[in-house]
Figure 1: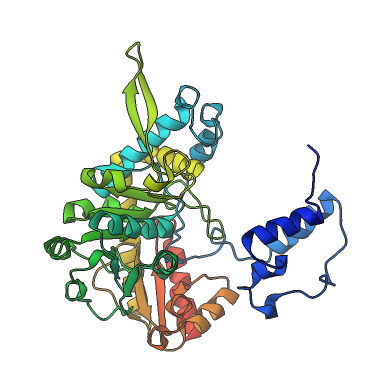
Figure 2 (figure 1 turned 60 degrees about the vertical axis):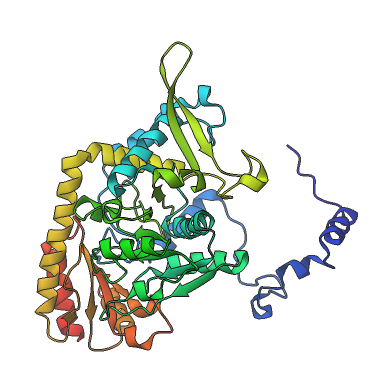
Length: 448
């Protein structure tokens, strides 16, 4: 296929049509300090594939890999074991169907695993129905708030201070461009929020995370009742889906919409992605749900088959009836999730959750014995907050120089909150060994 660039008259016609004078006007929101006024001078000349591979490998070798050193990172992206079977199966030809299942008769492989995925998500969350996945947990959260606004015909979302800032910011971005109000609580691991006091007659939903950003586990039943008494919906976000192996599902506590990050199952860490967003709700709200919904049917000969039951994007239905512009689901990541969870089974998933919690309890006890370290949590699953005698970011950097990824400084998530600068989020999973724990505690004793 030939590359046919636009002519200058073509460009001018397009610019005139959208009402700008030049291409530079399209980038007016980018600070001028970030603009280049000349080509980058120190870029190397072009090289062959072998040379480029060597250069990139050398650069990658300077990174600290979470798989090669003791790692206690979490805060929304978790290191878990992914069986080799998952990678093998997701590459099988039966799953290499079209990108979008427009024609069900030729995409039965894709539709069937998405149907199984939806079933798994509904069971995990304790909800009636789940969609075929979203981009990630943060965008799923933002879409959930917009869904609640439509369902309640209200325009004010109350968000817990314990909600992950990425989820908060994704929602706030949509609020800015679509015109609804967002009320955000203060992040403080030492204070129990009174979210019920912030619900008024214009509140469409309350968004809360469980376990929250600081690892605290909550009983949300009373909050759900308070939301429903005011005509609002309760949205529960889960950043660590493995926690649903032990904790009461949000649906059993009265949640109306549950969103989650599914990366922990079947998907390795990869510099922040790709991830897979989970989205589940009640039957009565299903027509307001964004994304796709696969369903089961029978053909004219009575054989089991799968179809797209609901497709809420404007590409599929009349634009004015669209509930989302999500253009796809995270198909490959959803497939990996489905395969891994199927391999684990119900009992295997329970044992995985139990191992995560047991390792976190052991680590918390060991850290509590380190002079200067204070464990803040009374309850947690596999992640908790500790207070250090100094800026957590500085201490984390010190330990990284020694080959230990100690945790996530809360100050990096909340740069404007000086009271959180000495807090660090620490995570233990099934991959955390006792040797890793001793290495962290010994390094902290020396660093503090």
